[in-house]
Structures are given as C-alpha cells and as structure tokens.
Amino acid sequence: MDALKTYVFRLFEAKAGDYLLQFEFDSVLLVYDDNKVQMVLWKQHDGDNRFASKWFTKVDYLELFNEIYKEQKM
Image 1 (cartoon, rainbow, N blue to C red):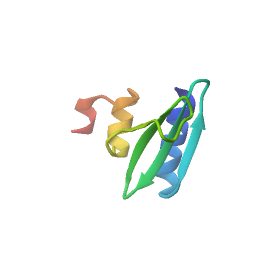
Image 2 (cartoon, rainbow, N blue to C red):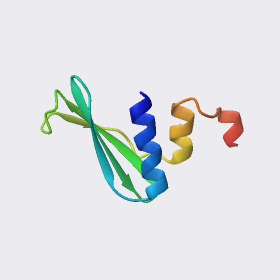
Image 3 (cartoon, one colour):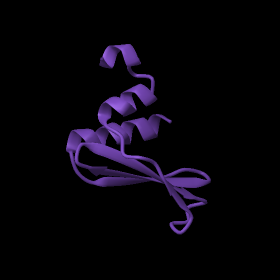
Image 4 (cartoon, rainbow, N blue to C red):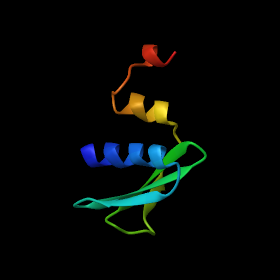
C-alpha cells in the first residue's frame, strides 16, 4: 500500500504522466489527467483483463488513504 500511496501523490506533484506498478499477482496503472488520478487494475498482469476506477482528486486520495478525515476537507 505504501508504494501505491507514494506514486499516486508523485503524480499530483508532477501534474503529468503515469506509472505502472507491478505487484505479485496484479499490476496497477496510475494515470494522471486534469488534476485527477485514475487507477487501472490489470488482473494477473493482463492488460486485456482490467478494471478502472473513477477519476479522483488529491483530496479524495488523502481521504481514501486516511491521511485526512472528511471533516478536515470541508
């Protein structure tokens, strides 16, 4: 989970690009566009067997990774 958090926030700092993270059983493609990041899960490292998340902002990811609480962002 630490690698995922690190690379998600690197995309927000760079404001461009993407990263492909390879884990033991699956891969995750992180894509940055218009101040949002999308995660695309490649099951068993197969690009034809993928599932995409919605596009989330930096605040959404901070909340998702429990870096801030909902009350703090309001």
